[in-house]
Image (cartoon, rainbow, N blue to C red; front, top):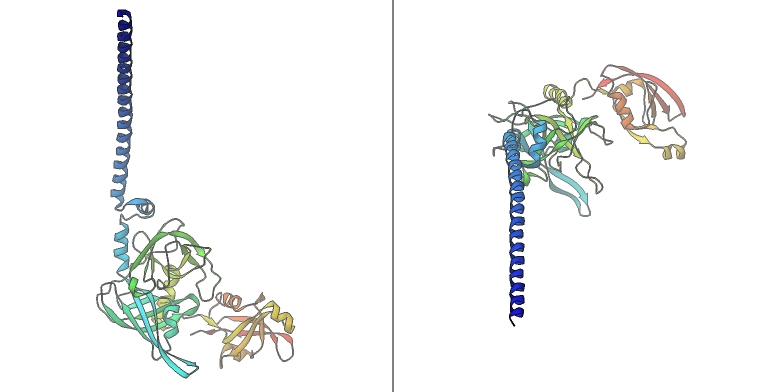
Length: 390
């Protein structure tokens, strides 16, 4: 009886001691875990403090601040850039009476178009895209209204435009205008900060700001009536942004937003006209109402593609559909239905190719045109002195 009791008592004591060891071991483990945890927290806290100090020094937060600080040298925050540059970006609303003939005879309805612009100087001249206002320039019923970021508005007058580069100038009469600060587009590098400011989808979203980077420079886009060399950006550019500002990290305008590639296959590919390219054109429009010195042949034409050329057994080139009376083409003897095939020995197979060659010349230059004469089917060559295009 006593032996059994002693055995049972011994078993209980052993179990107690075992539990005590386990408890003490767990406490030691917990102590070690707490020490390791405290070290991790301390390290994380130091990282957060360092990051916060970096963010505060850049004046902005998050990932955008990190990218922005690499491009900015003036210490402006992203909101400060938007405030500085946004004041000079305006909304443009064009209203015109459009006449169309339908099933019930002629009908007149009101057409409204909206875009953006940039205040160029204190005299009230505003830069925008030709496709925003140019189509209404000759309309007697066309009315252009400009809306400023400070709440003011004014009627605008169309001054002139450059369709082939998608640039135009309008003018308002208001005092104390917030004129844009212009930078340079000649030394841009891919990866630099970029901000697009404008009115996507119209005045309801006026002054919208999108942020990205310079994705590429000297881009060439196969489209009619765009500048030869464009700035590419991933800052969102949408309908209504046309004519608005692309600005750098100092709030300076470096480009004029013009087009984007809009397909389901791509995202974030927009383009702006470099400001260094645009300013001489804008200055000429302000001074003369057109781009002075630009050459013109004096024809209207259309492309003859390879299929059409084979079907009619004629050469590829530019078919002259009209000759402007008194123009260089008329004086040189070119006629409607002639086909221009070369200029100065360079093959011409499209209007875009013809325009590209003309951009290398000035008004007053003499060029040699090779053409197919429709009446006798013979190839001929003439010399022509270029007019000034107005």
